[in-house]
Image 1 (cartoon, rainbow, N blue to C red):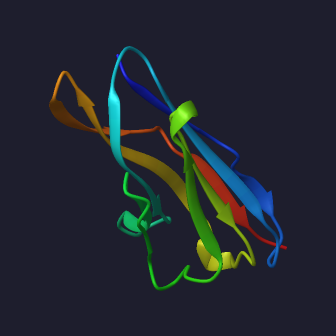
Image 2 (cartoon, rainbow, N blue to C red):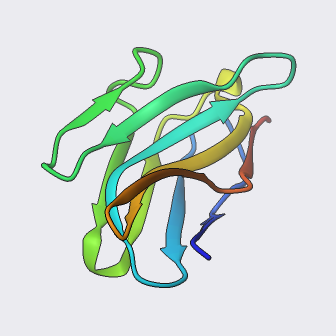
Length: 119
């Protein structure tokens, strides 16, 4: 059973930094796209950053220049480096990945990690 497990969330002051990690594990699989989403209280879940197997990355306009997505394919892990954090970045951050198991693509989600930006 493939699982995605996030870590690295917490409380940080405005202007601070955090690094989120998401590791995939469980069986034999091939990972395609790995993404980060977030959901703030009372709001819909939104796409924050995308990382494709070809190395392409994309970001929501609200985080461009402040967040960086990267991945370590050998470790089946994706990271989200978040700098110059703002109170509006407060949300539960979810890892999402398109994973192939015996050539069948499936969409997987982690359980989320809470990021709180507050003084």
